[in-house]
Length: 270
Image (tube, helix red, strand yellow):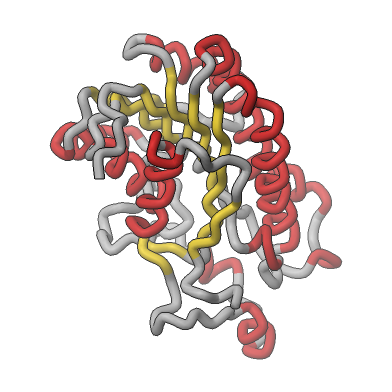
């Protein structure tokens, strides 16, 4: 299927690992001019090489930390060298810790909220004026099934992802008259089949052991409550399966779809 994206400028945040990397390479295969955003310079350089090899008309890496309010301006300045931004994929997200809300430190809440929602709001706010001026654009937010059902022991993360879903809907109403579509992909647990696909900042990088540390003291009973069964015979999605939907939603083939939140969950919500 021709996605009719050749030559379009696409920004992908959180681009150097797992879902973001797969989306970047999926868009590259459609011939976009890719602006990949992340914090790991080495992973960014590898991604640019892979994107060009996959078919991107151009590809550039912008080293930026989206927790910095100045980052969106930096990213858009780099993108302007390639043309007007047609596609924005807001993929930055994750969780700082895990546990029960009653035991949480209020000082930690802002970190999870800003990582998952604040970064998205700032990047979208900076990008929208250009899209509105051109009366065209596609925004794809990466949410989570946690924002639909609530992930046990991830209360603030789940709430922040639910906010991403809600923001997707209201923004779609607001900017639809300007020819801009806004949709959201809500994955279940997702991993890459490529062990080299995790940048230094990724929760899945083996050196970080994020999940092992986060749930080290969790009882077997609580770990059982955390698990959700899929109906497809494997417990996780692969990054390319999430990416294919994000690429479709960013394309003209999805030209009459907006304001939707699509789970990629293996039937775990059934």
